[in-house]
Amino acid sequence: MDSANSDDHYVADTVSAAVKIVIAGPLGVGKTTLIGSLSEIVPLRTEESMTQAGSGVDEEVSGKATTTVAMDFGRITLNARRVLYLFGTPGQPRFFPMWRHLVHGALGALALVDTRRLEASFDVLGHLEDLGVPFAVAANNFPSSPNYPPEALRSALDLLPETPLMICDARDRYSSAQALITLVDHLYTTASEATR
Amino acid sequence: MTSSAGSGPVRPYVITGGRSVPALDNLALETLVIAASGSAPEPRMSPESAEILSLCRRQLSVAEVAAHLGQPITVVKVLLADLVDAGLIKVRPPVPIADLPDKGLLKEVLDGLRQL
Ligand SMILES: Nc1nc2c(ncn2[C@@H]2O[C@H](COP(=O)(O)OP(=O)(O)O)[C@@H](O)[C@H]2O)c(=O)[nH]1
Ligand SMILES: [Mg+2]
Figure 1 (tube, chains in turn blue, cyan):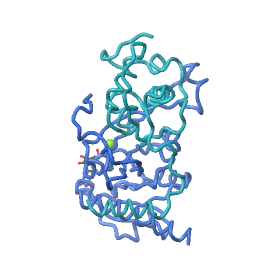
Figure 2: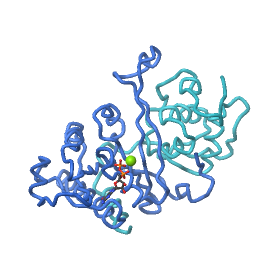
Figure 3: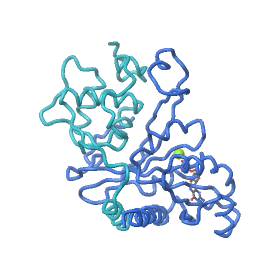
Figure 4: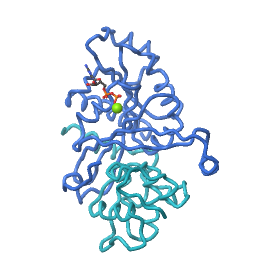
């Protein structure tokens, strides 16, 4: 594995804090592509291991099976003081035990949806709701994607009226940035309402 | 401690000395870490800890440290926590960000994204 041997791998010295946004969705939906479109570093991969049943040390000792979850992530320097990390997390329910940890402290999540297989995203959306993580939904258009009107997508995905929904091309930097902006704009609006 | 640094993956409990719970619970994936000024690898340090120290001569997130090392997050957190306890690694920010981000922070993020 490559090491951070070149100085631009590093976070600028002036930066004093980091925030994160989770990019969630089923395998092959475009998480890594979106992260790569936006990241200032080549997206990195890391692994989180988790015990299958519950909380910890005892299982580790008794040798219960551990599952390894690979996460791709990237970085965006927002300004001289702050960086944003984007963490791509796999959407299969067997990985959900790890999500609580991953979403802790996250500003919110962008849920990616492949319109050719909407049902593959149901678990992800349901779990974000269960965890109370605010999110927006970005539907990636693939060549053979059916052309749903937004309202049909909304009702198929059972989205709340306030949940933002947009069409996105994860391969395109501008489109990917728009998706994140829509999410954070939503978070901002919600926060201002809560503190008004 | 058996060292097999550079010769493939090391079983997590070996290089963390049997501990599987980080001493420092406020090490998140995005937490920024940097070597304390003047800190250098010590003779009794595991190769992985020494590698973390030299990697962190400038700041990186916990996730980046893990990715560059090729070790699982959980393992790297335990090693980092020990280095923090020993005063060799500093954590920035020292206090974790509040659970609910405030308007000001979200505005800052929004402004940053709009410049992309
Ligand atoms: N047409 C189209 N293809 C995409 C889009 N996003 C990703 N892909 C392609 O879909 C495949 C899977 O994407 P990937 O980012 O690896 O999915 P992940 O498993 O969610 O990380 C890749 O071949 C991408 O090039 C998109 O928005 N539009
Ligand atoms: Mg991926």
